Image (cartoon, rainbow, N blue to C red; front, side, top):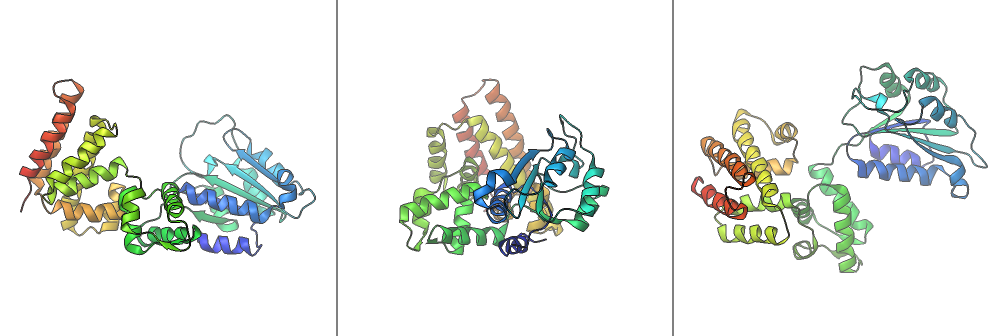
Length: 344
């Protein structure tokens, strides 16, 4: 079921006996759990009608027994079973083993006065399992995948309204470019900017983002390559020196540079073969916006030049770690060599 539909039903007090939450976007998953707790549980008796377990430490039979207990002085109870490892094919170290058949039996006639919420931080469920098939038939199954593109920018716009500010699409994209796509971090940045602006539906502008939004090292590397390929070497070195002043380790910076140039090479190889931005993002496990920018940057190089630069990065990594070269100087010299491979 789509997340928005599940939220709407819960707000209308239409509770399902069993929910399954899976996916790697934990900020949204935790928000959903908080909503379920607020809407399902009478706050006067919350401690008596809310339970939370770790499936790697508590037998599933004990969790189900709790779920079958009548609520105390209230109409509904909520039982959360985290780390529901038995829903995936991953090998997990556990203190106790759980019997999936007990949950299959529970699904045949689950009590309406309890909502059992199974949660696992995994990309997908193991649909070969009998239990997973039963849950897909009997439960509300909600995926929590990382937000991308329009969904991500729309979330930022809605989140800004929650803090009584406004942000337009162009600025939302700029914020993602600068800060990344982690929702927890984006939420903190929006809250910080709202406090700075004082609410009152104030507009978050480029200037506010430049002034307040935290830059990640990944963003700095991305901007460094962008500056070099577009001929802004002076600005690139200023960003590089700022990173050094912030205490960033040159070896880590070099590793991120290698990652960025590997992305450029992969884009250079696969994009001409008809792969879309979304397909490349899935292959490379990066945000589609990063692929879009990589496609723009890759056009400044030929494939041989990118392979040469990756070889030089590997050589500099060895020289840095073996103490053969000054770390900062090595990165500075690498950028001058990048400039020599650019096609104009």
